[in-house]
Image (cartoon, rainbow, N blue to C red; front, side):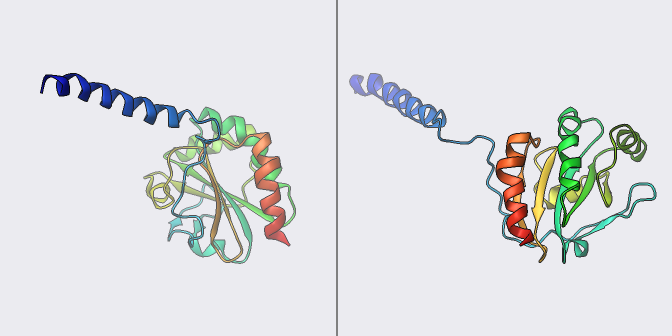
Length: 177
């Protein structure tokens, strides 16, 4: 019985070491979050527009390839990725829309006036309800939606130039064929 008293903590420690070691696997991509929404229709949402811009409804996603970007004026990474969102908006055959997440309309207007507006439509999600429908983990977050309104891609972190070139542009090129 006394041996068990010494062996049991050692076995628990060995189990924890193995568990932590697996978490440090360099092949594991910590930025990739599995999403139950990939391959699913866009969530049922209807959001009012920002200022004079049109709002967003789930029916708007059918018929065009859409990049949906959740952003907020208070989000520093959103500012960093904004030039890349503008680059996406310049691609032919791609519709870029945005949803302001838990932000005041006045602050969102000021943010877009300062950085430029790449969005064809902007929905205001001041309650965070649309974010919950999309499984949002935080802002910024970007989705690619195909012509049938099916979510094909989710990036739950700021967009960077490497991901834009290696992941988003090839996927968008494939979807626009």
